[in-house]
Length: 302
Length: 256
Image 1 (cartoon, each protein chain N blue to C red):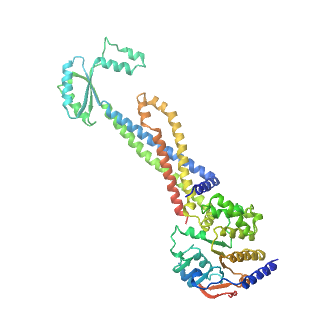
Image 2: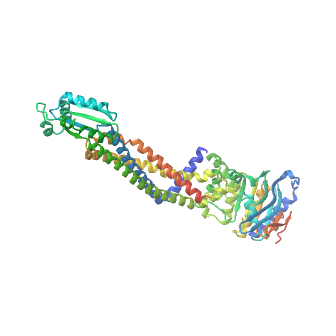
Image 3: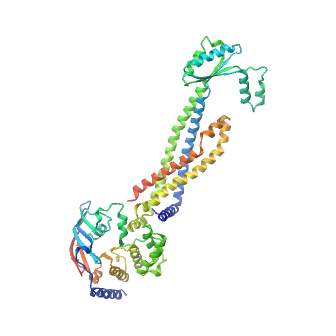
């Protein structure tokens, strides 16, 4: 294929696009919408994935000790725990460290932060435990609440981690299912509209196509404009969808981070890679557009 | 006016006939050969039954016969728009029944075809219509700029080169079709009832043009109902009826 013939095919394609411009516009918008929705759900999945990942690496269980418990007792317990195969890590947090953490956590809130000072530090010492699997938490809890250790321990907090992860899994599954169904619906509608647009283009040029065949145009010269049109919907749709996605991200991220708390900032910004989303949109758009052309050409171009 | 043209054409033909004709009757000048060609359609319609004939360089063939005799079918087979049910068709030594799908467009570029309904691109000028045939064959813009005006001059439409196809008369439209058919210097020009939609004056203009093209070496196969045209031409006439050839005469007359 020469450059000049590509240019001619391109020109034919654009003329055809323009001639049915309202339908072409509808098809393009539908593509943008579909791509955006797919990106939206993919983004949700990316974030929940990242969150689950990061949660998994954090602490699973915190064991808070009474002030009466001696340091030796704590370290003895720590060694016993470390020797267990279902425990990954056990870290000791001293009162001073606990105070540091407190100060850091409430650095923006003077009242709360200053409620505790180093002279009269009520914060308990703790062992932070990381288990191999969430399922192990139960048995470790039983171990720690046995008669041997009960008097040493003031409080055990672990339920939340499991709960959060369960919740996360629930959200992920839900988002996946809803996402797939909704995306599928939009994909089907898009395909129908774009298929229609290209079929219309083929039909409205049927006279010209007959003459093309008569004077000996090769198949790609005849079909070329329609493939360009299909791919065009994909590319144009992707470019617009990327722009909308970019805007949506820019506007919504600060609000989301605000709502979920400052800890989420890292998750959201690192979980969603803008170029990944843009690339996904382009690939999907091209794929859908070209599939539609193949179907339309097969049906209407003898 | 039509009568004058008719006479003028008769004169031209007489002159041509008087010249020493370059007819070789040995097989090497055979350009087209139909060998036992049959074509049937579903519903048991036998459009062509065991048709055989040869066409040599420079011949002008009139193909006649009542409606349904098989003229259009024969032409469709000759343009490779369809394949025969049986038999072979050779054009310039090539068996066109064995053309692959990708080769058909190239065959189409070598054979010029014109029809009763002209088949011009709407909303395009004479120039654009003729140029179209070149564009489709990947000709450069420069080649197009050179060739198109020349061909338009051959068919005598230089004064109308910028007119849109809708603005043309029937005869002019057919001349554009002929010009388009000539862009690749075809050795074969097929005319399927080209004068069917034309008035008598235009009819003779077109026939004269086809005759002129034939004089310059192109084989012309003319399918027609027009008895007067066939009789005037005094050329070979192949008559079809019910799918078979009933007569094949040099200097034939229109016989129903």
